[in-house]
Length: 531
Image (cartoon, rainbow, N blue to C red; front, side, top):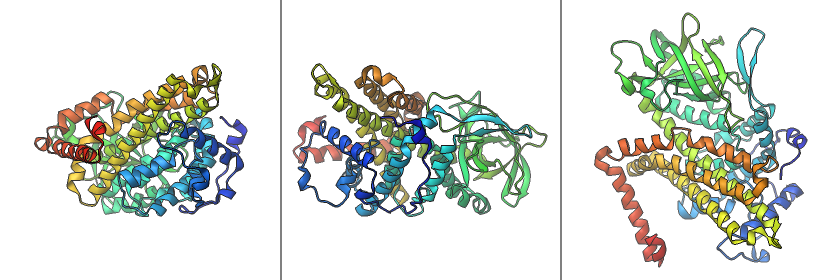
């Protein structure tokens, strides 16, 4: 199940660049085809639908491809997109995107354990400055990701729901989260595009979209995690510059992912701070949003410094830093994004996008755990028969299937609501606002439970590094923390969202649920409707 380390580290980016290109089955590696056939065979054992005879399947390439990946299930993905959510995208276009993603993950997926085992490290340069060095394969992987055009899916006009389907495949293949660099950058770029000045967007936006500048979100501080109203980083007005209102910032930030690395020369932090002065309201109402780069437009270094790396139990390919601003005399240069004192409301755009991403990532790890344990159960014999034939093992597999596939359907539903809201459907936006905390929290909680059952299927082997389950479990656990714990999400949902507009959003959600129940009853699905 785990390829030798030498083969992982021997991988190099492919010259394949076309995002919609599709390799014929004959061009695929024999070992990959063999793994795919095994995955297909094992998946049929827990499917409730009768498997069609192989001879009846149309030879269009897709049915050959749909079983190639141990990282996800193409049939499930396309079912949710086209038959549940009915996304507004051509099926052939979606298939081309997913084919291209599958090619990428089949090539690069085996390198992920090496990224987990060799996390980023803090190094000291000759001039005494500190920086973060990531695994060389992380940089090659990201370069190939951009070369193939995956970062341009939004610019190609693909719905967010389709982008999330692609991200689901990526998530299952790269649990150590090297693509966290790209996800954070995309969300930061969206935030800048929505709220930044034209001059600021002109300086940074195209480079962020192209992967030449990595974007982060810098909210928490050592003493203030979810309680952002208590942040102490201050910003002093320094006048107007070519990029708009300039400020000098001083303070400390904590838990910032994708910072101070050597993947790109520059990083742009979307950072929350409090403008110094009597006009700043107390608490969360006084927070403003700034873009703070590592390198200033003239190429000189900004007054920012990494203090240390947080040694996480999971997502080890993505560095997570403690850092400071304004250690020198003048302070770090930052540029105001949006209006003063409106930073938290603006940042919620990025936070909500990341909540969907976290839920999606959790679903991907739940599905990967299911597939790995399914492959093992199909081949392992105990008591004179394959363990997949034992009722308790079937129960554990089906429990995983319910959690992982339900979580995926939930996150794609949220992404579809996002698409509808972007197209001007205000009711869809209100419904999304009413479930966003659930979209983040439920998959994070229950797909970790799914990974627990996956380990249990493997017995003693599940707890060893010879199989990927122990890494999946470690990588799944931080999802319950990212973007706020489940308790914090509950406080936001019930303490703020439920009462907004007299509960109008929850009423819309209730009406949508009632409509689905009525449709289920009308279709003869009374037991399902009652459930």
